Every structure is written in C-alpha cells, then in structure tokens.
Length: 360
Image 1 (cartoon, rainbow, N blue to C red):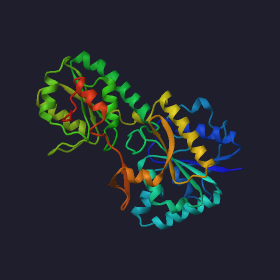
Image 2 (cartoon, rainbow, N blue to C red):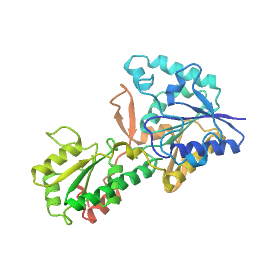
Image 3 (cartoon, rainbow, N blue to C red):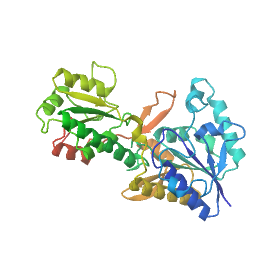
Image 4 (cartoon, rainbow, N blue to C red):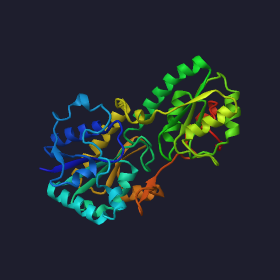
C-alpha cells in the first residue's frame, strides 16, 4: 500500500479544496494511505511533522467547493524558504524538510503551488529525493508556462467580473468611471480576461505599452459616459509612484473625468469554485495519481490543447521567462506572460476597448 502526502503552498485560491478532495477520493479507491501536511513547508519544520490522515469524511464533498485550503498554506513569520534565506538558515531549513519527509515515510508527495513554489521545488529538488514529487499548478495569476490553465484562475476571473458588474450599476447612476485594480503581479492575464468579460472600456496590463493621453481621449469620447477601466497591479507609469489605480485615477481627474478607484483585493482569491475549475482540479488530481502509479517524479501536471498530462519540472523551469525573485536571493522563478499574439488582445481591440499599442 502506498502512502502519499498532499501539501498546498504559496497564495491561496479557489479550487484547492476541490483538488485535495479529488486526490483523497482517487487515492482511497486505490487503497492508498493519504496524509495532509499542514501549513505547507511550515508543517515540515516542527517535530513531529504537522500532518493529518485524510479521508472522505474529513473533507466532505459539499465543502470541496469552498475557497482557501483545508490544509492551510503557511503562517506569517514562520520558518520557510523566504525567512530561511533572510536569516542564513537555508541549509538548516532544507535538512529539516528532508528529515521530516523521511519521518513521514511517504512514497510520494503531491505539491500544489504556483510558479514560485514550483521553481523553489526544482531549485531545492534534493529535499524531495526520497519521494516521488508530483506538482499541480494553481494560481489566480495564470503566470505559469506550459499549461494553458491553472487551478483558481477561472474562479478569480468570475469573482473579479462579478465585482465589476456591481460597480457598473453605480457607475451608470452617477455618469462615473471606476478604475479597478486587478491582482496578477507582473502578469496581465487576470485583468485582461476579467476586463473583456465585464465589458471594460479600457484594460491596462504590464505586457502592452499604453499612452495616458490616448487613454484619456478614448474615455472622453466613449459612449456611454461611464464604465470600468481595468488596471493590472503590475503596470507602471513613468514619473509617478503609488498604486497603479491611484496613478491612473489622478491622471483622469486632472483631465476632468469623474472617477473613483476600486480595489477588489482578496475577493479575487475567494468565491465558490467554478465548474470549470472543479473539472480542471479533478483532471489534475487524476493525472497526478496516475503519475504516481507510473513511478514518475519531478513532474508537473499541465493542460495543453484540452489534453492533461505531465511534463518534467525541469521543462517547466526552462520554458518560462526566468526572473529573479525579489524576496529570496539567488532564486530564479519561471514565469509566463500575456503574449503579443494573444487572441484576446485582438478581440478587445475589435470590441472598442482601449488596450494600448498592440500589433494587428
């Protein structure tokens, strides 16, 4: 009988509980023993390791739709890859992780994380050499190479769209523009997708150059005279500082355009998991369990052309745009961004949405 572990790391999102539930179900049907590691790598830094045995009754199916992680994703100020690097205890930290994994006597570990977590797993792969390591991609940012979708993205788009839908009503009442700041870090996928879904009049993302004067002219001549201006949190404006939505708002105000800023913040990480994310979570869980049966290790599940399969974790790292992590010295993360050829850019342009300078 195999003994497998599940661990969620990084930022939370909807869909985590769904994939945990599906892994438990699939593993139980195989007669495997399933353990959940609490608080991500934090749970491996205590003695004994913070792990609980999982079964269908512990995470009932009606709760699997809820946002967040049943296993938690970590505590503030706990010893983790970031704090270990800050305090010069990386070697001690890695040894403790490996010691705890040996103590749990796992045959395999399914790590559910974003591009930072998976880049860390590859950079510190010696930690996991005693287990099969299977990774499942989740993030609301959709900034991971090789997979066309990540768990949590679709629900985040839905929640951000819902937020904008409500703002649109008060915008109409007062002939007012709302500058909405989306999450996504340096990637504009969340802002782009939600902006198109909500019928935004303008979408500003880090990957596409834009001109404020052109934006202002576009808004001034827009009909109706109200709506949403979607701004990704990763955009910059030369000569200005502060939150991106505030910077754009000040420019609009100076041009005589009545507007307000709105920050959906962490509601983008919340909300009942959409059917699309639930299906993706189920497919990724099934793929991960099959990978364990096939004795694969250091792999990641991906969705490509509607086919779910695994790719080598090294391929994930090599395929992305390598960027230095601002919080962990010497860590290079693998990133994906909105491509200049992304079809949604052309769609936005054709629908009269100001999107900046795109190639047609």
